[in-house]
Figure: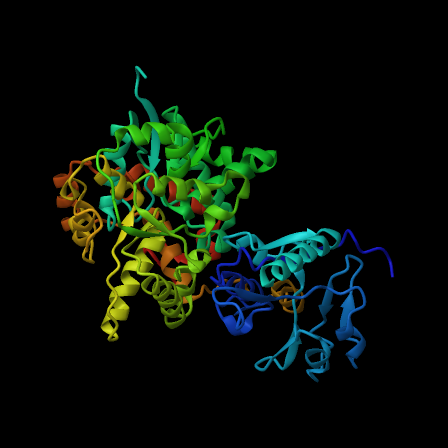
Length: 160
Length: 293
Length: 91
């Protein structure tokens, strides 16, 4: 694989997230022009293990995306900018990508009968733009990896 | 100080109407501290950093630029208590100072009305005005009575965390601690009051508010102090709504300026505290009795 | 999404239908800069507390006119289908 350290990705920091879920509304408005938590490409859930903390699930635009490998219709493309996208005109709605993705980022829109996933809003992700606490930010993959490692160490230190 | 320092007080939409006490207390406090708050004539909605920024970003940045420019006309920095307004105005300030083309476009539109955005004056939060411009020492000197024994929870609000370098959270906590009350740090201090959920799912919003309130009840909090009028609205109305569903919440919510005005020796009636919908008097009674309920 | 749709249906009229929650806010901004008209009760209270009259947009016709003209110049009224005669969003 090419060096993807400089690729822009989303980074979610649970230490900052207030759980307001406006990112989900901004996402559904950007893609479907409606406000609906069900039509969002990223999800914020309350953390069942830590009270008052949240879990953010968003696409990592993997280096070697398993959703792309699983798609029988070749509808998933990884562009030159590294963004993994579903071509809704090719998608047959089989849900293979939904099942294969370890965090189930692609989801099937039952009304349109095809799958959708984060398309990085053409380089300007609305979730990060409208996040009121700065919990979702756009970082390069290298920065995101370092920050995530720091977060893990912090959580482990707290457990001890 | 010989001459009173002037500063433009950007009120936003809630402060001049439903939360009059915030405006009144703010003006009293600033005058006591030797700062003259100026009203911005012809100011509009900031506009809000969610809806109008999503639907009409061009209008959003132009209107925000216009509001700052009106303050600049008076040759003063502008400050606001609302976290939403602060976010909009600082965002617009940065966008206009960094993007020359946008600056030119916005000014072209504003020049038709004889307004020019220059970006020479700062956009401040009330926390910055009190902590950085005025300073804790001067506030301490003015304090005549303290809120001894009152357990206070702070609702910081979300948007003041956006710029970690400004340390607004730490500064706000220090400002509250100066009042002599017992600051209760809660695990739920970080979480949202529920306002953004109101757009879509009012039930979810109420659940969020309940979660925050329950943590306060559990920790025996007497009152909530905050700056953001949106959080104020949600936390107060949320309690009233929940009380209609057989709950029994009674935690009064105060704008920080109100508590400061009380500590400066002003009576609650002077700043219109009687407009609160929850029992606010018990807090001042508790303070006067030295913390005994 | 919307751009793909535009490519598929180039003759379709571009129209933005706002969600209900956004509609009121946008209408108010275009109408009076979102500074709502105060009920008489608050006016009396303002007088009692001696904090002066509100000087924001709904009291200031000039400011109101300026926002509306800005909205027209930037094409926001057309984008959200704002009916100037009824002061309401059409759809």
